[in-house]
Image 1 (cartoon, rainbow, N blue to C red):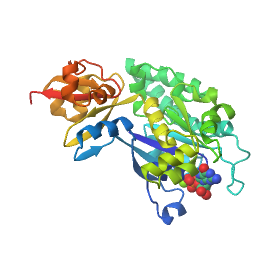
Image 2 (cartoon, helix red, strand yellow):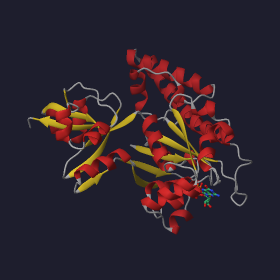
Image 3 (cartoon, helix red, strand yellow):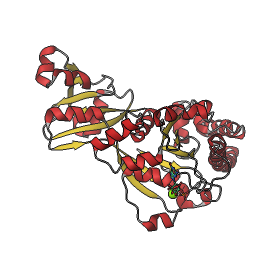
Image 4 (cartoon, protein in one colour):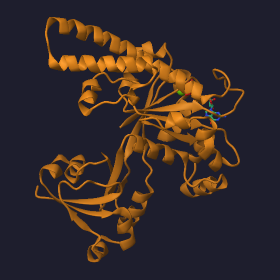
Length: 361
Ligand SMILES: Nc1nc2c(ncn2[C@@H]2O[C@H](COP(=O)(O)OP(=O)(O)OP(=O)(O)O)[C@@H](O)[C@H]2O)c(=O)[nH]1
Ligand SMILES: [Mg+2]
């Protein structure tokens, strides 16, 4: 899974990227704001950490997400093939919004994240509209030459998308059947991608409360409750300091701001929810590991993400909820308590399940 970090100039995109991926970028990387950076972020998961304490594994593997830090967005940037190439290839967007006050860092005007959202969304939609118009012309020509049921369906969908965009609504809000989605897949439309609005707020003494209220304060409640959109507020300054600390120091530091967890944990979790992803765990003395699958995945599909052989030779999945296993203290205890279940191929994996795949391979 790959998320593109986008936004207007100087809103904190690269800062967020560095904190997420713990990347130490060279001065050179800052000197060229048009250059894209790619990095991997570990998905923090307290459940996995606690389970691993039962096993003391040789290796502890968290799930990971890729982030791409792109230069500032705008009509000009969207004409550059490398910029748009990077942007098309992400699964989701993290749109960083400037909310922090700092007179020394220029912004397009007074702090107004709703205006900034509209501007950036407009650019995404104009890019999609151009692509749709080109494709419509092509399909129209082909339809004159020959009749094709599939082409007609594509034509209707493109027309519908065109009208939708002309009323200034992004494609992520267009109702589509799974077939429609397939028809659009190859286009990699920008405004179709799920978006997480990241509010980068000022450092304040009551940060916990300010983060919670940021969405309402800036009148973003409507914008962030639209289909395939979500929001997370963070304080870039505080997160940057946190990322340099040991776990104990970080916990104390968070508490001093009235916070329970880092903004990054919340941000990554919200991205998972937005993309309809869940985690399940495999545990053992060699390795304890978190895996990522789409919600509603069947046990046999989950097995396939671990190894194709496990999918092919799947017999049963020994399953237990992560908290039930913690409570039992060991698999043996869980088995005698009857909380360890045997599930078949079609079992729908739940977020936080611990799976042990039994196979004949
Ligand atoms: N006060 C304050 N300054 C911040 C915060 N986040 C970032 N900055 C500053 O804002 C400036 C721009 O930060 P970057 O992370 O480089 O922003 P960017 O969006 O990547 O900028 P471009 O790539 O040039 O568009 C830097 O001077 C940062 O130190 C914040 O939360 N508070
Ligand atoms: Mg940058």
